[in-house]
Length: 225
Ligand code: SF4
Ligand code: SF4
Ligand code: FES
Image 1 (cartoon, helix red, strand yellow):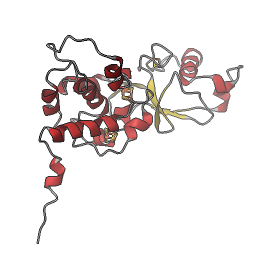
Image 2 (cartoon, helix red, strand yellow; image 1 turned 90 degrees about the vertical axis):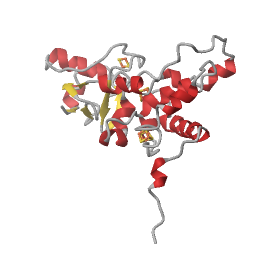
Image 3 (cartoon, helix red, strand yellow; image 1 turned 120 degrees about the horizontal axis):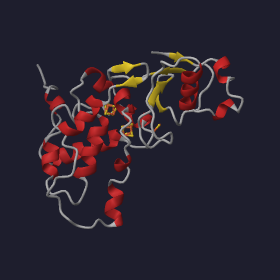
Image 4 (cartoon, protein in one colour; image 1 turned 45 degrees about the vertical axis):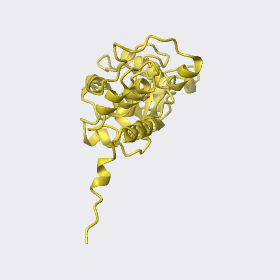
């Protein structure tokens, strides 16, 4: 579904239209014009990650984006559309399982220093909005690719000094994982939390190389005479 914002819709708001969030706007449309309109929302404050949509081709949180005349609203890409602006988030979430993106149960029971906490602080801020999956051109053509937020989450635990077996985590991300990313940075550009999955993937590649792995794509650059 595509929704085009028109000036007459915006003028419904007697307040300054520049202060109207897209989420408020959608709620007004639903209560005054089309009660069937479906969209997801929760916290209304950029915390729960449930309201991500695309505006003019770019992923945003509806509760943060201020609507403008002529804005075009669409659902996230690369996920099944359940209805209108609501997409099925299950597939992207399932990649956390495939990537084993969690702390091992027998992790070291030690207190982290403030310096240790800083190492993966930003990765812990992911709100699982799926914007990065919508923007990722690799995920668009290969839905087995573990993708940005799962790989960021793997780095979050690989870099955790309490983790006893980071090598196992590196082993699980070699296929449809770190080497499939093109480092295009689209995921970083759209992330509302300022997380760079691209940078995390580069760090995972470096750790993979330290474990003896290499980029399988380089093997196809053989010399022929
Ligand atoms: S990494 Fe950023 S864009 Fe991706 S799911 Fe987390 S918060 Fe959303
Ligand atoms: S940098 Fe990698 S993970 Fe991020 S959007 Fe590009 S291909 Fe996808
Ligand atoms: S409603 Fe929770 S992030 Fe927008």
